[in-house]
Image (cartoon, rainbow, N blue to C red; front, side, top):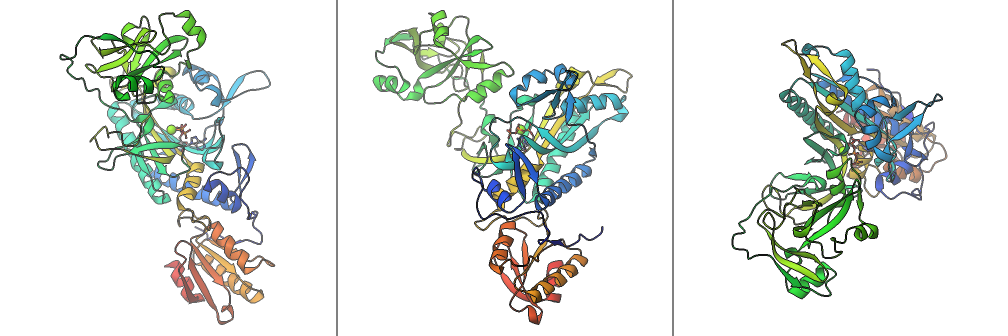
Length: 566
Ligand code: ATP
Ligand code: MG
C-alpha cells in the first residue's frame, strides 16, 4: 500500500472551536464538533469533515475486514426504495412515523431505507435458485434513514446514519445458528479491534420480528439503553429483555376469596397502609386499549408497568390509555377498584410474579371495596404472562438470583435470528436436494458505524479532549511545530520521514498560531502520540508525548522514528 501523504493542519478543512455547541448534551457531541470532526447540517443530519471521515473510514475498514473473514460478500443496495416489498411484509405501515416516506413525480410511493431485509430477500430470490447457492452472507455499509423522535446526542442518534447491515440465508435452523454464531464472533473481533468496552446482552426482537437476538452494548453515561448485569454470573440483558420463568405455587391452604371494605383508599399506598400489608401483597390492574379493545395489565402493587414492554408485546397493534368515555361505556369497570376475578370479556395479561397459585389483595370491582385471598388460576385466569414491569436495581438475576446491577449503555450492534418471517412474506424458496422447494431461513445483523465513532469518543475521551485508540485514530502521530521557522522545518522533515516509514502523520504547521494553542488542539484532536519540535529543535531533539498517560521523553529524530515505528 502506498504511504499516506502527510496531512498538514495549515491546509486542513477543519477548525477547532473553544466552546461547546450550545445544544450539545453529551461528550461525544461536544468534542467531535469542537475538534473539527463533524458539523451539524440539520437536526440529526451530519457532515463528516476530513478528520472525522478518516476515523469513520477506519471503523469501516475494520468492519469490512472482519465481515470478509466470515465469508461475507459486500454489495451496495439503494437507499431510495420502492414501497411494494415493504407492503408485502407489512412494514410500510408498521414502521410508523420513523419511516421517511416520499413520492416521485408520478405519485409513486418510495421510502428511504431504515433497514434492508426486504430488498436483500428479493435480491437473493432473484439470484439464488438452488440449495447449492446457499448458505450466503451478504453485507453493505450504507446510509440509513429513520425519522427519530428525538435526534439528539450528535451522531449517536442521527436521522441519517451509517450502518453495516448484513443478512444470512440458510436452508435450515442449524445453518441459521451457524451464520448467527459466525456474526457473533465477527462482532466480538470488530469491537475488540475498535477498542470498545462492550457487553453482549439478551435482547428483544422489536420491529424486526424473529426469535433469538442479542445486542452489543457499550457502557456509557450517554447511552439510552439500560442493561441489567449480574455481579455473580454471566447474565447480562437489556432491561427490555429481562424475563422471568413462571413459578407456580401451591394455593391449597389459601382460604376462599373475600370482599373487604376499604373506604378512602384511592392509591396502593393508602390501601397498603390501611390494611397493614406491604404494597407487594396487592395486585394492581392497569387498563389499556389495544386496537380499541380493553386489556387489563396486572402487576404487584409495588411495581411500575413499563409501557414500552406492553407496546412491544402487542406490536404492531397500537396501545392507548383508557379514557373517561371508556369507563362510562363499561359500568362494570370500577375505576380504582378493578380486580381480575370479575372481569368480563377483558383480556388479562400479568407479570410472571402473578404466577398460578399466588394470592392477592386486589380490587373487588365495587366502589370502596377490595378483595383478599384472590388466587391466580383459581379465582381468575391470566391470558398471558408477560414481563411488563420496570426492572429495578437489585431485582433477582433470572439465572442465579443475585441482585442485578443496572447500567447505561449505547447499543452499537444488534444480531437477530429472523427465521422465515421475510422469506414467507416474499416467498423466498430455493430448490432443495430432493428437488422440492425449501423455504429459506434468515438472520439480520447491524452495526452502527457512525454511532461506533461516537461511542468510542464517549468511552475514551478525557477532560482534555478526544483520545483515540491507535487503529481508529485519524493519524498515528501528531507532529507539532511549536515555535518559528526552525521548528516548522524540523517538524516537516520528521513528518516526511515518519510518512516514508509507513506512518499516518498529521502535522501542525500552522503559522501564527501559538505553541499553547497547538498543544491544546493536539490534545483535543486526540491522536495517540504527539511529537513536538520545540525548544531543542536546534539540536535536533524532539519531545514525544503519550496522549493518554501524558508521559514525555526527549528523543533525537532517529530515536523518535525508531520508537514510533517499533
Ligand atoms: P435504537 O434502539 O438505538 O434506536 P435500534 O434497535 O432501532 O436502535 P437496529 O435496528 O438494531 O437499531 O439497528 C442496528 C444498529 O444501527 C444499532 O445497533 C445501532 O448501533 C445503529 N443505529 C440504530 N439507529 C441509529 C441512529 N438513529 N443513529 C445512529 N445509529 C443507529
Ligand atoms: Mg436494535
